[in-house]
Amino acid sequence: MLVRDAMSTVVLTIGPAHTLRQAARLMSARRVGAAVVLDCDAEGMGILTERDILTSVGTGQDPDRETAGAHTTTDVVFAAPAWTLEEAAEAMAHGGFRHLIVMDGQGPVGIVSVRDIIRCWVPVRRERRTLVG
Image (cartoon, rainbow, N blue to C red; front, side):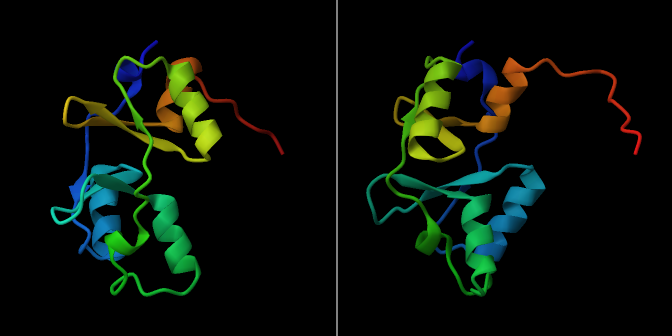
C-alpha cells in the first residue's frame, strides 16, 4: 500500500504568526494532529504538531502569546505519494516523529500520520471487546 492510499488530504496551512491557541483551535476543528506552517518571508515550510503545542503549554508558556513560528519544526522530512507505507513508517521511526507532509510537485497534497498507517495495516474490528473487571 502507498502513502497516497493512507494520507489525509485535509492539509491545514497556517502562518508563523498564528498563536498556539489559534493553531490548536484550527487543528481541533479540522480534526487533524498537525498543521503545515508557511512563512512567505522564509524559504520552505515547517510543521506544527499537537505534541509541539502540548510541550509549550506543559512548560508553562502562554498559548495566546506563543506563535506557531516559534514552535515549528523546519527540518522537515517530506514523503512522496508513491512511497510505500513501510518507507513512511521507517522515516518516522528513524526521525522520531509521527507526521509526514506529503509533497507532489511544489506543494503539500496531504499529511500521513502513524495513525493513518496503523489504520491501513490493522483491520478495524466491527465489534469491540468488553473488558470485564
